[in-house]
Amino acid sequence: MESPALFWMAAGEEVRCLLCPRECLIRPGDVGACGVRKNVAGNLFSLNYGLACVAVDPIEKKPLFHWKPGSRILSLGTVGCNLFCPYCQNYHLSRFETVAGLSEITPEEVLRLSRERGTPSVAFTYNEPTVWYEFVQDASQVLKKAGKGVVLVTNGYISKKPLEDLIPQVDAMNVDLKGFSDRSYARVGGTLDPVLRTIRIAVERSVHMEITHLVVPGVNDSLEEFEKMVLWIAGVSKRIPLHISRYFPAYHWDRPPTALSDIEAREEIASRALDHVYAGNLPRRENTFCPACGTLLIERDRSGRVKTHFTDNGACPRCNTSTGIVKS
Ligand code: SF4
Image 1 (cartoon, helix red, strand yellow):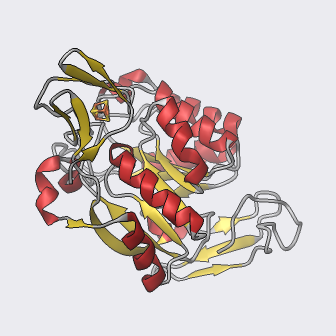
Image 2 (image 1 turned 90 degrees about the horizontal axis):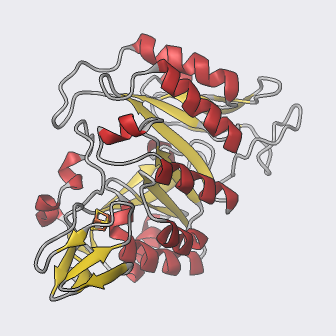
């Protein structure tokens, strides 16, 4: 649905979109690089407002491991993305051509669906929520008023002002950190600094943060760069869970899947600096332990069952170390 967009300025007949660091200059009748923001007679419109696919997922699938573990979450996505990963694992939703499979929905219907399905929270996920900004903001306000949790699963590639305006409505984020250099980000059509800024601002505003890093052969496979990334994360907070994921061939990238030894090498490096490191797609590595005494805090089995053993305020029951885990 076409709806007036936020964050843009007129530039003659063209408009400059200010939503993400790309700052597209868009000619009349054209769309920006994300494919979902259009110049209509000198005004910018969002083309995907209220167009969604909806599902209910275990929250661990986002992945969020330390925020309401074991709960289920209403998950909404649309089309459009402002980065261009050649290995995109969700490419059927990242481009605008696939809009035909989506249904119309209002912010109030999102709340109704969340109540009907009994989910304590709602995630904006699957595609990039930044380029769904106006709908995410409207729906988040309705959800927050009703006491629902709001989650963004995002690439973090958003400009400062839109992020700061949205963040009071956001409880938790998983940011996909694609590398730790402009060289790695050039492979996906972006730059690193805006993503780091998003993580820093969100943590400063007490948003629960988890980070995913997909290891893609030929894109971000430098161990030196990975080590720098981990040290940077630890400098923000060593309690931020890091999910290291294996890539599988998709979209335009046909290299073989990430070798298990490559994941294990990163797991070892990250574990030296961070309290909680998970190796995605390797279920035996997905339990949570107290970083101080090693007590098992959260058990996750292959069938998706989750058992928690931490205290109501997220501390270890044995040594009382605070972990930052948020109970359902
Ligand atoms: S949100 Fe879309 S149109 Fe706006 S600057 Fe980013 S890619 Fe361009």
